[in-house]
Image (cartoon, rainbow, N blue to C red; front, side):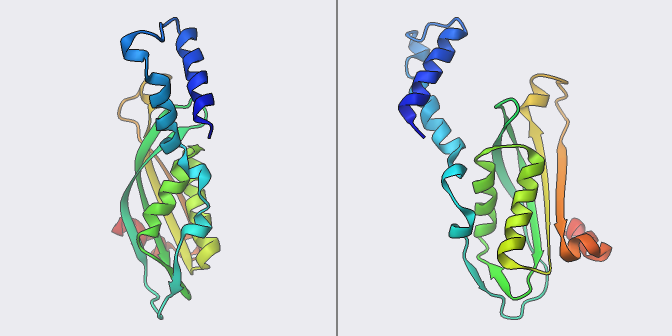
Length: 182
């Protein structure tokens, strides 16, 4: 990402809004926005398959769950934030992932322009492809600023999405166990 180019675009945007970019409160805004975007969209610079540590499962065949993973993302339709929590579960077959890598996976995909449905599916598909587990379950719950501050302006609306593979999709007891545990 070219920080100087972002700064120039933000400067133009400030002018287009009718503001004075030399006003004290705005003088460093282009620089701050460029720095902020480096973090907010840092997921584009990371390949999850290269960062995730995979181990032999040591015959562990029960559900593994990471709960309440906070995330922040940017709606690709309005360039406004959406944020919430992710719950991930999987049943290993022959491989497990380093536990800290589950929140890391959420971080990588959420730090891109997104929609919630794709975010949910990317997390599930990456785990499924990498580990070949007996099943994966992912639930994402989020609030979208594009719904809170504009459009329908419903302050308490929360969106839930899910993605299930393998036993989580085929076996109602497995899915129910996961949903009860989260």
